[in-house]
View 1: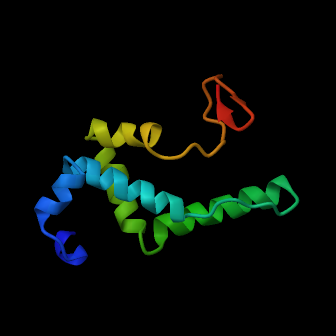
View 2: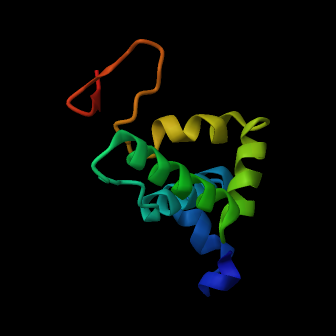
View 3: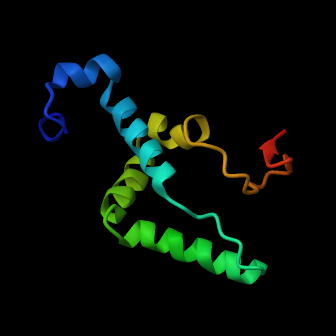
Length: 106
């Protein structure tokens, strides 16, 4: 990654204290590039659009990387907890009865 960015590894570790932190930050940046907002006029149309976008995420250019991250998260607690700490809230219900108010967690 350092070579691709044209910097030294020391430069990377000044910004991110560990490989986990770097991977989590990269995944968060990637997440921001995904557009799953849809308003087709129907719930069915919106769900189809979201599911197509998710399928493209797992089968497209970054799909193998995302699958590897998901697999690694089963063994790496920091990586598994990262979406709850770092990725933006989507407003989607998460279950567990907590609910949302105004698109934000209560």
